[in-house]
Amino acid sequence: MESPESEMQEVLGRSDVVGATTDEGKGRIFPCESCGADFEFNIGQQKLKCPYCGFEKDVELTTDSEVVEQDFHAMLERIVEFRELDEEAKATEAEGVTGCSEVRCDSCSGVVVFSGTLTSTDCPYCGSPIQRENVHTATKRVPVDGVLPFLVERSTVQGKLKEWVKSRWFAPGDFKKRGAQGKFNGVYLPYWTFDSLTFNVYSGERGENYTVRVGTGKNKRTETRTRWYPASGRFQRFFDDVLVVASQGLPENYIIALEPWPLTQCVPFTQQYLAGYLARTYDIELDRGFENGKKRIDAEILSDVRGRIGGDKQRVHSVKSRYDAVTYKHLLLPVYLMTYRFKNKPYQIFVNAVTGEIQGQRPYSWVKILMAVLTGVAAVVAAVVIFNSAN
Image (tube, rainbow, N blue to C red):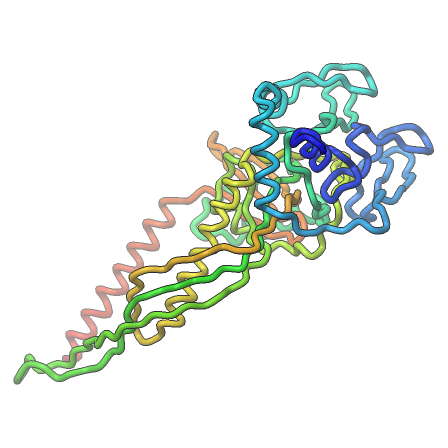
């Protein structure tokens, strides 16, 4: 009978299980078969392409590979069992994965320092794409199930950025003229997706409005009042691919605004898709990710409850939910990031590298805002004067 540690290593460390990398993380660079230079993932061709000689190669995927749902509770149990048995290995993981480590470049033998959860970058000495070996298939981390490859070229993003800058209301004139100047970096961000069948029980009140005439003489008026009736019920609802970003330190409002993502276009993960790009491993663990996912699920359930109560108004007293058949996927999704400065203040821009959706920070012209407010106030005053004159 295998030990829990052996079982964990088998599930999280082998290359022939769903979610493991097809090359077992052995290659940190991908040499061109024609000239020996390093391949990069080409967006237009959706292939590995040598930037020097132009030789192309298909990304290697097994014929039977597919992105499938994983058992959430089973994975949590395996992680707990393994970590209880090997606390020392857990400490080593904390140092090696989320701290700093040194990696020697296979091309020039230069030493590269990885900080935090960064997993792939270019060698600062020779420019070769490198990756920290086995970071996505380490026996103590949940393996990546799928990746959504980059589809939008940097040149296209630059054009969309110009349109985005011009469409910003109340932006300073010199900002609109100069634009957001900086370099876009392609990065794969880690995400969890969760499926769950929920069973929900709720109680509350349905409010139905009616009008009455009150007062006398000049004080006679119509008032709207509400009759309240008890309401309760139960229902099931299935949630599919509830998306949760698995990396900390990102502005959540901008990241969420990049949605929706065409998740049906995800392909089984292989490190070859990372060639020439940055990637980050998750630092929001699987269980915490589901807690964040439940916030989105609960918000949808509450909206559903209000719709089921009906009426003109609703009072929701309680909602109790059970989450069954929970599954997850660990995905890498492509984003372009850019930090630019305007009048010595930094701003960040985020681009969905599949749909081209742009979200980000921008400067405001308080002079334009003040003028708009004053114009609005003047218009209201003028309307009041005209109304009083007419009466």
